[in-house]
Image 1 (tube, rainbow, N blue to C red):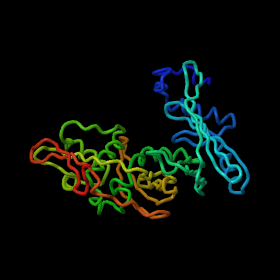
Image 2: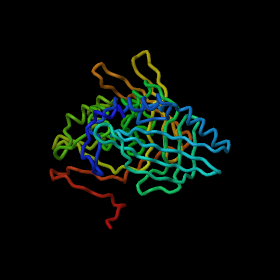
Image 3: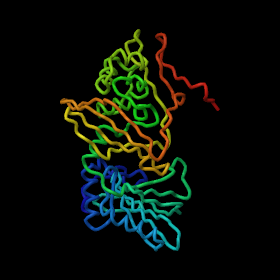
Image 4: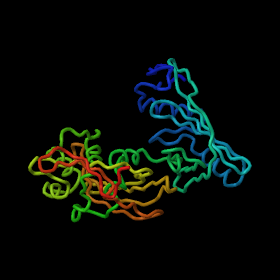
Length: 345
């Protein structure tokens, strides 16, 4: 409660109440304080405190013994979810309580409830994956916690080079490539994600086309490609001096990558060893990538190559037809077009 006494509450006493500007440092402090009390606590992109207790719980479960463990999850907006896993008489359930806050660090219960669980699993790599018997609308097929710690260096490398890149919307991460065949991965749809990695800011479309100077600066910095290659493969419109903005629908249950090891090269490059984590298909080792990056003195960098190897799951197939494009054609205004395989109902 001490850590919440100075927070400001937006929309107090309504269902939309939330903490204003809850910082990453505040969130880390709450996780640490809970951990100091011997509690299992965690938050996004942070190692779990007292994770050994989760391992003990799972060991009891696998041995058929009754067991119970509560995980305190500190959310980015400052609320705390307390999720209790119970194994009793051969059945497994979860019970959750969501705690919010009032001015002055006064806690309040926002919601609570229980779920029957179909399955729980602690992987060798250290992911605790659990499956609810009933999946709510738009919910995940499975939920998870990363139990075993990941080094600060691997987390930082993941944030800088991997976070937000897609395994399913374009083929940058699912194709073996280097400077000799880099044109095989050039797709207009990848620009938005690469722009965010390059600038650390979300892409915002202004006007009818993406200016060529912006598009080409980002792509030629981040990949071993020439302006001519970018113009040939990424939808350049010479008459208007810009590029199409191609927008795709997000696919549900996509995998994500995490750096689990790395190697510094004598030439200044870094080889990232990346595991594809596909929780909804019960895998934290679906495939592995070796991605070579070249950092530059100004803080930017270039992806030099990618090698991927299938492990527990087949590689994702890139579906070219599942997209909406915003195009500039023959000097006309942008249009939205649907693939012929879609119906309007």
